[in-house]
Image (cartoon, rainbow, N blue to C red; front, side, top):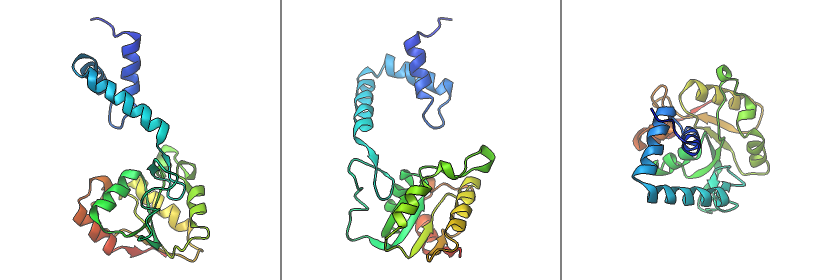
Length: 200
């Protein structure tokens, strides 16, 4: 069997950085791009280069955007008293699609997992504290996933806010056990936000 070239090996290895893509899947993608989709591969390359140059973190909520402040944070119609904390930018997109939160967001860009050695340093706590300082926030809604990691993150955050003057709530348990916001339907998300429970 012919061995892949160094350039092809590098491409296969690079593709494994994508979530849920192992070496075999990466190899299939690489062959597909080079054999049948060279125009698409060129467009992918250009889009990735442009995104790397222009996309950054929102100064306020830490999501990904092209401006200093994202469109949600810049919207004067949003309720500044409610701040929803989520894991990743895709969770903001899910909430916005469900039309169940008219406040602001903060994106942790990670989660806590003691089993994997992922502690507070793996989430943007310092940026969150800075976001809350001199803000009009009165309620913090913890909307982390209903997984072991999401529950650990929610617990640590609730402890962090324990002695601070915020109403801290968590999405209702109508969310499926092990559920990630990204894959939950809009109706269930809306119900979980509406029936959120107080944590402190």
